[in-house]
Image 1 (cartoon, rainbow, N blue to C red):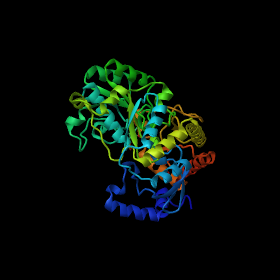
Image 2: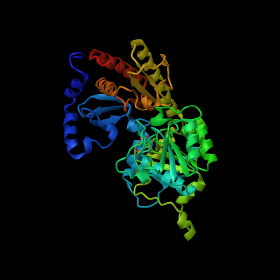
Image 3: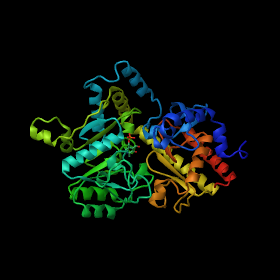
Image 4: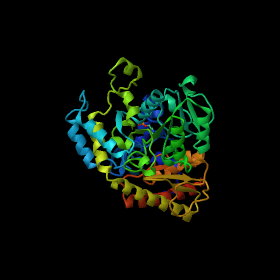
Length: 454
Ligand SMILES: Cc1ncc(COP(=O)(O)O)c(C=O)c1O
């Protein structure tokens, strides 16, 4: 059948159940989705179930899954130890209405793994984690402004809503009043731009960044930026916040800060932290975190940072999180995922070269980004960390948006689900998944060529 039907036609024809669910969804959910990133034309595949490195859609198609819970599932779907721990806990209560042992164990695990984490406060998401980290930085320094980098994503709250995606031009952000938006300064991920921002603004409470570079390394940081960020924040009395929502427990058991040997003042965590359930945390220096402590005097009460949350460290997230952290602690699952990701990146680049297709596979740690359609001067048939393309093109994973979309659809048709052009590789993936993905890539390329799209 291939060659007679377009990728789009075949996608629509082979997924009637997903189409039907999408139609129902559009009536009750904005654009039919519950997360912007899940929206796709003509409709997203509806997923019925998942296990290990695979999932099955509502029409019965099996997929190698690289979405992996938006990066939360470093151990793959349904890791037996996490499932067992959850099954036991769900019968003992999903909210115990009080303090419990699991949250202590979970916090001990975080403090034991993350080098700069002296004290931990749990939240229910990564967005909440960056929100409370920023409030702590403002309260600690007594300064109002936050410095962020273009393209770096820290969740959806007001303080980090600007410059999430290119073009990075000043614009109104609907729903965020200008006096609020103007408290956040955003500059390119560039050593000199960061230094200049600290010279120009003496009221910066913190610099927050993704230590991998924007979007878990899609747009890698220039060499020396983390060192410069550490130095500038120290010199200017501001805090350095590493947003390790993705890199935490993935770049190393102790996160990017352990891998690169640079310690922030505060770290935000989520995803792998909670073993596949909702959960986040801010962790860091005891003196900064002490602002969350119970106030013993009126003077203390005036300095205190408020923070609540009904489901903070709920026992299900806590048990999944502490079990996940116990499994990843020796670094072996992370290493395994990394080896497979490196194999995937190299294998794809071999095919890019062999087939003469513009684009590349690249990335760091257990992540593989794929760009199709842009010529990449420094590509070889091997692994690649930093493609020679402008940061904005890297952030969007390619300049040809139509081609990126059709490539994603074609990969789904060939049995592989990428996450907006990226693969979160887990310890549950196998060599055979990687082989299958590379073969799927070849077939996707020939489909797109047959249609004249590539
Ligand atoms: C680096 C980073 N920070 C923060 C967040 C927000 O986390 P959550 O989706 O749990 O609110 C994300 C989510 O993808 C992220 O990638």
